[in-house]
Image (cartoon, rainbow, N blue to C red; front, side, top):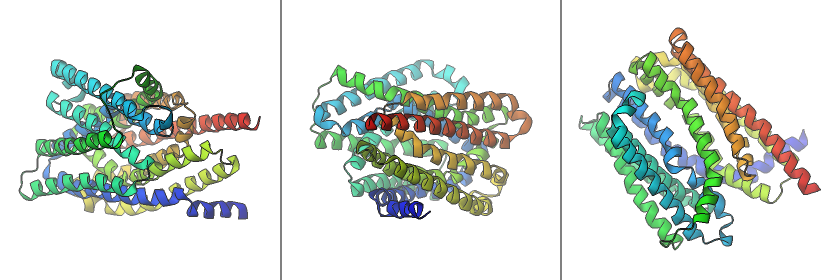
Length: 426
């Protein structure tokens, strides 16, 4: 017991916690702005409009791994081996692939946009905007990921928070001027993302002396690393967001609005988990590189699991009393969804504790193995039973889907790290 307590004290003193606190503060401040905007959007937009806005956001999230091909993750991983390659050329090769991908997808959307409407219920204009924001996000993720690698926390915070402040102030101004509607919100969003992607490109070219040179071998190596993450990301988004499309078809846009607004409130817990993960990924990469003691790593992981569970329970109790006050009485039906969404977010936090182990050992395909059964489970059950059991059924399925992903990832992580440490001992 004393050893366990000592390990927790060591965690508190470590660079991991210091970095986690910094990133958590930055991300909470950053995400506080969309949180404050939620009451404005739910009041300015009708239930039908907010439902369409939610579908647009879901489509944008699904597009992010497709457009970016998760190549920003490859850049971050390669940063730790940058002395072995021409890192500037590597980054330019990645940007070239991103430009090629967005150009192709925009062209396809313009040609077949009417047919895509049957799937998304979105006009091709909104689909194109979702694709563009996904492209800008890939550039931003590359820039900000390298800030984290270089431990430039202040610059990271300034860029991240500035983007949110600009979006927040613009949307707030539109609300006060009574000009906030679906398309104005979308146009503001894509404009802000475009502005900060320009800064991202400028910084990358300046910092890493990027020249207009492409290496095929860099592209192949990056895609070999990132493609499993792309497929895993798509699978994760499909199971996490497909319920919105199914709800839209079977229960209507008003039900989508209630479901999405409630989920966004609960996702404050997800923000905390992702903020921690920002520091955790780099800490665990460095620790595994230095062959951290396996027993110490396990103790740290157990302590983190317990911490996220406690935070989830406390947060859920508080949110249950505040939901109608925050988003308005017309969203009161979302109270029945809170507990299941809390469970989903806690399980996602658990997943984020173990998934970096697989990425460090280049076992990204194992992440896909975790996602596939969750997608099948979620889509099949929602299609067949959502209309019968109602909106809360989708929230339950979301929670159990994350349980599947976590359990498979946990078992894969344990197996891989044991084998890796056996080889080190041998």
